[in-house]
Image (cartoon, rainbow, N blue to C red; front, side, top):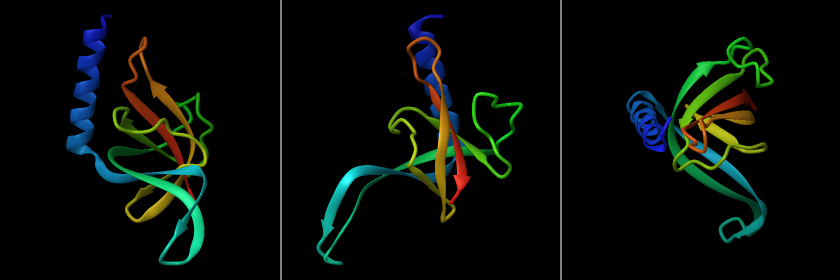
Length: 122
């Protein structure tokens, strides 16, 4: 398939996720600490990235490449504008914090389209 076709598929995926997805926050924990003037303490360096994603229950048979456990969820998120998901990052959804356990990119050829992000409560 051509690169332009993959780009078109990526745009379609992004449009569908934006239309049907829920608002979420991707919380990336960075190395080091920053000083908070209000609390007068050093705190972990955190970067929050708002995005839209589609949540589904994780099933081992549908995701054999991921270490799925009972109660886990998969977030389908467009790759553009989102950091590459990694441990110990978190996703905040409906006021609840979930930990990133693993992710499987959907990337035919060199075109990264979406991330399948495995998350777990806590």
